[in-house]
Amino acid sequence: MKFYKILFFNTLILGTFISISAYSWMAMWIGLEINLLSFIPLMKSENKFSSESAFKYFIIQALASMMILFSINLNLIFTDSFLNSISFYLINSAFLIKMGCAPFHFWFIEVIEGLSWLNSLLILTWQKIAPMTLLMYTFFSNYYLMFIIISSLTVSGFKSWNQTKLKKILALSSINHMSWMLSILYLNHSIWLFYFLIYSFMNLSLILIFLKYNTIYLSQMFSIMKFNKSSKILFFSNFFSLAGLPPFLGFFPKWLVISTLMEKNFYLLSLLLIMFTLLMMYIYLNLSFNALMLNINETKMKFFTIENNTLFFLNMFNLLGLGFSSLMFIYF
Image (cartoon, rainbow, N blue to C red):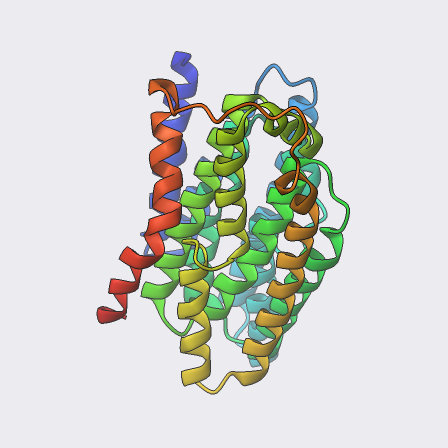
């Protein structure tokens, strides 16, 4: 890894920690800007679309930062309750733009298509920590929150039909998972953190597989599966875990969210989350059914070699993690 990438990666982490630990609005904004200006150089790669993605990302994030500054000034200068409520709507919208939540997702899918897999992992996971943590302390409108959750569920559900690019599938899956995380964000911080960690682990597992086999399109992955059954097991165990299909690991955090929402009498929200998750599961199963049933030109299953050990253990954790993580019910 080049020295400048190590430097900017460290400042990226620093910017996030400054934002989430800040005691003032300006310190929070400075942390977000350090994070933004550190991520832009990291986006540089051999991909010919990386410069375009970096430019789009900078414009959108700069717009969101301007909204944050404007809302901070509006809140400090005016004491009128109506203007204060507008400032809170603005700052919350800015955080949602930075996260790529629907209906502010228009940039997210386009940017992620031009990134390398490692940068995609960063934007899918680490870059959501600061805005989502700050939302935890600023959100105040249940109706606006419900609108964002329903928008994210709807967009991710219907735009996932007939997708063939793996990065688009992961981006839309991220939007869907954000609706789940926003649902629990204000009710139980521990469950939100646990959900985010499991979500990050699932993305890491899948992206390591895509990196290993150098795949961009779903058809490429299916072609590899014809000759390598172990890749089929790796891919689908992680893919189904990301969809939240039991008995895989991704099912457990959703189970926790639904249990908590039902305890707090959020029955309608629970129903919507379940319905759209079933839609996502159907889409994923429909995409993968032919590949699972594929028997043409398949060779005998190869044992996992040393180079596959990391992926093998990640895969086993996806399969066995539900049983181990169920012990966390004692804590929650």
